[in-house]
Length: 183
Picture (cartoon, rainbow, N blue to C red):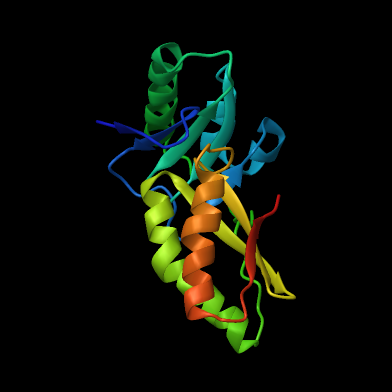
């Protein structure tokens, strides 16, 4: 198995591309080891000293490291963990476990338009950098988004939100006044 590795705008995060499907639908974000019990691959990666976060996308695994670890040491261990997981034949997410990014069902046409813009214009670009953005709400002109994977903690995430996503949403949806990151 050959796994490609790509850097991301976040120096603490690398994107691993196993050349196989990771998630059949949706994404899964694990910001700490305690959340990884529903995902055998995330649990395996958190067992590596220095892994601080795991994000599963459609065809990639994004891993965030702690500040005290170096990618030169950590990268081979993460690659080994991903290979071992695929060889085990275990699922990415255990049956019955809900995936992250659950849809917020709202009939509001403005919310529908915001979600469609995020899904079609923002998500594909953010996924290239090893992350994801999840819509959390729209109230009083403010769009709340949760950044995951490489986007969480990325030095350029504020610029992405304010200059990229906010400007685009304000252009297409005049009711949008501001975009904010939420946990």
